[in-house]
Amino acid sequence: MERYYQPEIETASREQIKAWQDERLVKQVKHVWDNVPYYRKKMEAVGLTPDDIQGTKDLHKLPFVTKADLREAYPYGLLAKPLSECVRIQSTSGTTGKRVVAFYTQHDIDLWEDCCARAITAVGGTKDDVCQVSYGYGLFTGGPGLNGGSHKVGCLTIPTSSGNTERQIMFIQDLSATILCCTPSYASYIGETMKEMGLTPDQIPLKAGIFGAEAWSEEMRQDIQNTLGIKAYDIYGLTELSGPGVSFECSAQSGMHINEDHFIDEIIDPETGEVLPEGAKGELVFTSITKEAFPLLRYRTRDICMLSSEPCPCGRTHIKMCKPMGRSDDMLIIRGVNVFPSQIETVLLNNGYAANYQIIVDRVKSTDTLDVHVEMTPEMFTDNLGEIDRRQKVLVNDLRSMLGISAKVTLVAPKSIVRSEGKAVRVIDKRKI
Amino acid sequence: MSIKQISVFVENRPGSLNAMTEVLAQNDIDLRALSLAETEDFGIVRLIVDNAYKATTVLKDAGYVHSATPVVGVVIPDVPGGLNQVLQVLTAANVNIEYMYAFLGGKKANHAYMIFRVEDTNAASAALVSKGIQTVDQEDIEEL
Image (tube, rainbow over all chains, first blue to last red; front, side):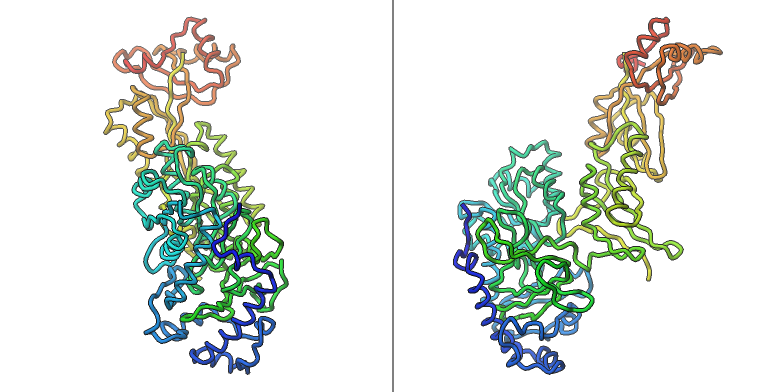
């Protein structure tokens, strides 16, 4: 039986969800107009006042907010509550430039943790579960968010944070952890280490995992599920909007339900900014309608995605988003072609290689080069040089048909690619442009 | 009648072969023979050692990817035509040689050894033995 953390919200009628969104959007626009000069100026620049926004139908009139706005307004420029009412800051990982800080009132933290509790409940979590949070704790939202959600559900929470993999495994075994929360690359590493220790999936007490904060492929999901003997679920979020839990996967494992009572979703054409119809592929844009301290209107996530409001067998009525096809920050433009690391990962896993890879992009005599470093595994190794060469050629061909450009494949020694305990460093771009 | 050859994956860059031989040296593994097949990026080091079980264990612990391959070890008399005679037998038996490498006969130096990697190890051994050519097995290798 499907369990919900907040059934009356998660299974509300579409009309009810829209009514919440209309009412909360109007209120939120007034809130930023009154309290955030930066927003007031942005709205005035396009001739808008709060009266122009009567509901979600008027959302498209509002100007976008981008990461550049967040950097420009650093640190207090988008703050909508006095600091005395704020209780926490969190910050982005800073991998794509200057850090962004987000502020939370106690109410903001409360709603964020509700979202995470919905995600934990959706993977079958109850107060009888033991939830190990192996996301980093601290400025990164992964650890604190899932920690709070786990408390709300009533799980026994093990706040291991990331790192010290042997200790992670010791706790999973000794305290019979049933739910693991971390990045997919770290889940994969924990699985790999357990396998090396001779543990088989039936000896691992885990039953489910909530993995997010980086793009991962369906093939990687299968891989983690097989190694750990669990169901692996995706979770999505951004520090700018709260953290993990903006959307989450349910038992159907076919897309993430967006918490639409807190976030209004739009898909836009990243070139023109035009709003696209449901089902179209484009950039995901969110408006946070319940955040008090750090509300964002029409925030451009840079994530390329699709939405679907097809009825879900789990009974939730909130719209689903697909796995982002790549953050446009992750997207590489190589010889004019858009390449996402997740595409390369898919090809590697389909060919029997491990998900431990690194993409090295360089420019030689004004031509971009793409070199994929892949670790040799015991399964793929043979004494026969011709056979290794043949497999390598198959891989090169599959990469070319997936990406549309040719890539060089370099087989490297096992464990030679640095393992990540948080977000994996998949791309090294050496081009000086 | 076969010998266990250990094949190890190493990257083709300075120091990577040395790092592997260091592991063997520290664990008192005695090398009988070594051959290397290389590509631009990596190589396969093929080893015949005194203690194959110990060698595979220590290499695995050190994080090396390896595999065990059966090969035929043949005693080659140190006289003109010694190798030729052996190859004639294999040719007559229609045995295809994937690769081969030689090593010297150690203290009893009136012969050398040749390691053959063939598709059908048993057929090759049987053909050689039937023509009175001496082959060596794993135990002989350990005692060399």
